Amino acid sequence: MPDVNDIDWFGRSGFSRYYYATFWAIRDFLEEIDDKWNSPSHAQIPDLLGKNLLKRIKKVLKTQTNAKLLTHAEAEKLKHAAITCTSQLAEMLEVARSIRVKADYFPNEKCRRVGTVVMLGDIKDGVAADWLKTANRLIGSLRKVCEKIGLII
Amino acid sequence: MKKLASSSKQRQIKLFLKKYANGKYRAAAVEFSPDSGDYFVVIPSEISITDHAKKMLQRRLAKALNLNAAIVTLLGLKSNLYCEEIQELITGDLDIVDDVVVSHDGVYVTAVVFVNGNGEIDSLQGDRNLLGKLKRYFKDRSLVLERVLFSELSVAPPSDVQILTALNKLSPAKLDDLITEFEAKNLPFPSLAWGRRRMDALRRNGFVIWQKSERYAITSLGISTLPAAKGKKSNDVARALELGRRRW
Image 1: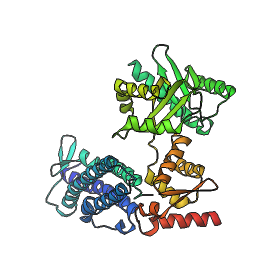
Image 2: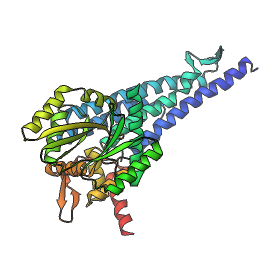
Image 3: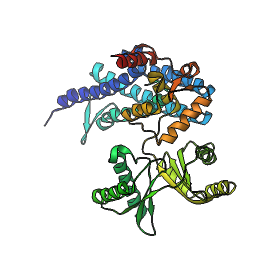
Image 4: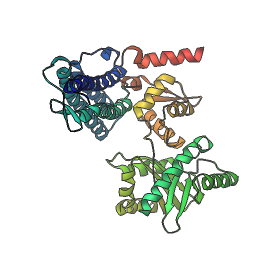
């Protein structure tokens, strides 16, 4: 039977790994779009997604709509999908990063066991385990948009 | 429940057709007749199939999926003009119709509408307004609409930008080269006719030009619409690598 310290040490390491797996998935995707985005800082990623990437997508959509390669409705549909995915990804990564910071740098914030669930702050281990799956789903949708408009070849 | 079972069988047949004979019949529509309980594999007229090949396909379907499927080939010449007009007529502001294949024998018309989502098929099938529109369209041209079949494309076809991106890399390229390029990326063209129509539309808008040897080349206008990625992922690098591959 693991004691309270074991749960805390292994638990916080687990939360940290869940975050890093998600971070790497998003970082790899960003690098697919632009070589320069291959080494962003942790804090930079939400901005890269919500501002830089979205700005680039909107610019390409505008060019292609003006050239009549896309209809206005098609462009709006793609823009809406991009906004939804980037904002959800950015939001999720912000939450995940705040938990990772707690796990790595705040030993006073203990991981605790509630029934069969391990929690850090108000995040359950099951929720953290889903970060990567959710990120992959959103990245998949975002990749489709980028492929359609030629941002990813 | 019966509908669910039949649509799952239809999907199985489509998957089978995707692999059978190197995917030659993948553009075929698969229909289920609730009255007879039979499945119909409708082969568009542009795909040639002999009687022997039909029997072979029927036997292989029976063996692999344990079902009876009639193989129906569309008669007559398909008309690109009708296809484009009908696609416009059905689609309107909606982006749900990927391709329309029309066949007629001078009087009776069969239209196969390829839709890009299964939910959309149900809404289109039940749309009497739409059927009325189609009937009137053909009546005005002294033709009788015999049947409309709706079929789902399992993978969305490449977008115009994706076609231009591929053409930028391969230019000058035949339609077959583009089809091969997209099949390698698991982005199949719904049909050869669809590819010709897309290229024709891109040519009319000045994004590509058609060269004598049945090859297409991208124009400067076409290139200007592609995103300017920098570094190793840019279109220029993809083009340079392709030219190098051809040379060596």
